[in-house]
Length: 124
Image 1 (tube, one colour):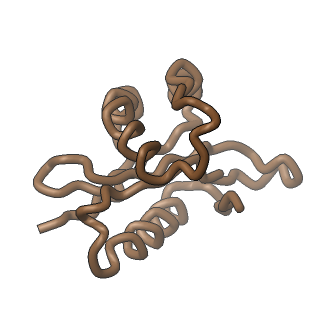
Image 2 (cartoon, one colour):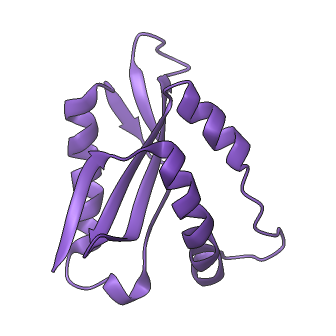
């Protein structure tokens, strides 16, 4: 049974999990391999220390199979509007069945609605 978890996870522990999952994400979904995978984990840690990093996980039997990462900060155009800016999201291919991706996306958006940001932005 796949359990969707929308609670904030410990971003410092999650960064270690990202080191395992990012290569899978890169190999499968990176459109161009012109740039090597080289995440700035120190920047993620700085964002976490500043309280600006929100990680939402999807788990199956306690194993992280997917994630959504958001950077929380005031919107540059509306500084009184605390906004969750989408950084990256991923669900391992073997778990992409039914509506798990859609449920995860809306679960993350609903989670933000209850946790403080006034809005969320998607990258296009």
